[in-house]
Length: 214
Ligand SMILES: Nc1ncnc2c1ncn2[C@@H]1O[C@H](COP(=O)(O)OP(=O)(O)O)[C@@H](O)[C@H]1O
Ligand SMILES: [Mg+2]
Image 1 (tube, rainbow, N blue to C red):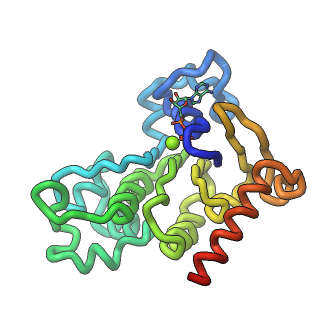
Image 2 (cartoon, rainbow, N blue to C red):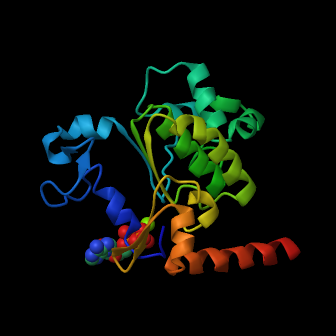
């Protein structure tokens, strides 16, 4: 986590090698990523970026993109995990509804959840969610995270968020500021540190309280 412009997107972009870090700086399972063929590396990474992108195709084709052989039930399961299944079922032609320019316009949160479905259906070893929950409300976010807990088991998930509530249960939290790591540890460790993370946390607690009162 970290403020806008602190370097979160840049840091995770080093993993699928959208930017190259110095030789030996980034390892996956102890192996320098430059020793892994690029297509193999990327095949095992599911990346949901801040700017979600949908094709002018059906909902099903959008979710299945990159995994053309998956069954309809797998598409539904991915939609369920991303907490968008009931909404898709409510669309005029459900999974066969056209979206984008020539079809139904999805909300920002629906686009993000479609993009998450697209990433999880490929069953990646490494899942990267770069502010992918920013357009959904806190309730929807919690539901997605609950479903994702099952998906995250047995794989590595990198979750980027400016909301402490999203990342507080992570095994390890890395706090960025001005392009560098300033704090690192579990939620409890970072609270005890009483530094930048603790300050953000307390600020957000107060904001949430105010929202509830409003
Ligand atoms: N370690 C770094 N050193 C120098 N510039 C950086 C570093 N990390 C990020 N930047 C630059 O800072 C800007 C914001 O970074 P970005 O990764 O988009 O931040 P965030 O995702 O946290 O909002 C970008 O222009 C990026 O190139
Ligand atoms: Mg970013």
